[in-house]
Length: 453
Image 1 (cartoon, rainbow, N blue to C red):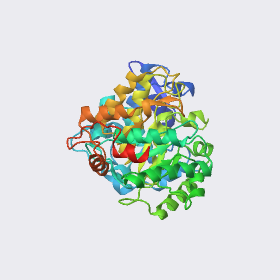
Image 2: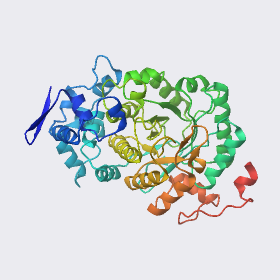
Image 3: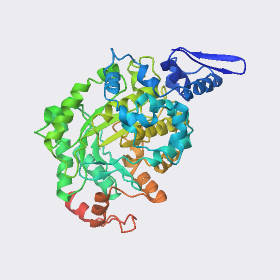
């Protein structure tokens, strides 16, 4: 089906929904690299005008990737909740945007939305619109603590080391804890994916957690097959996996939906959570499908939203977009990274996901730490569930720039945000935070330092 709109005397025609979505996307280098971006600003506006008139029902009738050839499309269509969709089923994309921005929107409709609907409406929104709607949405998950409550911001403590040195990792973990980071997860990207190495790192985190009774969870971000292999032999709390928005992308990651289901069920059976059973941790990023030559002609932001359709199916504790990590080929500069992060956070939250953002960039991108400060502040206002805490903001294993423990303190202080409630109580118990949420000074005689390092 073709979609058309006329600006002055020029009629713009878009051959199908996939093309319309791509042409309506705010400009980014990845879509231009794939040959999917609008050729002119006017064409982009024309596509957005045409997209605004598309009924939401159309997204249930016209798949951007065929149902017969893509298991993610099948998952999206087969699990769609028609009852939840019914109250907004008469909307166009433009109507949907206006409703979301109103004071009377019922934002519990997430199960009735498809990723493509959510991607479409985001393309009609300014940055402030993305922030305004996301701010309204509360997505709460639990394992050993409660993440996502309004007025709170959690931090993944990311103590990566380029040789997986236990002393270096231990020092980074302690540094993060002393600054109040780690309530989302203590999560390590391992230098090697071997079962023995992953088991050693999980044991290291779990010993620290148990020694000080820290109400948090651990994760070593190995491949899902490695996690399955060591379950029962290692203290596996969360199962991690990078995911994409097309079947071909996930195949390039060595996964299928059936494998994710197997890991999900296996992790549930361990029953390691004390107050909840959200056991999965997913990471995504705009450009992953394009970098794998697996985008199927779909723009990178719509592909990203489809990845959230996969994540939603497995009730994760954490989902985060590693927004600037893939490189300037996909998000060229600070402006594109900021826009993509706000889109991703909005789309994930609207689909009912516990969204975090790795506020980051690679060293060859046209971005700097001022851009990240701006993005961090915007995400704090938007109600982001969690961010990363990296020593000095410079990840020495992955070689990219993220946010530091100090950055987490900044955003909590200026916006009056607190850690997860159970973790907050732990920080106060150990003299790391006072009753007003202020960080307390730490000396060499502190209990954590004396008994661990």
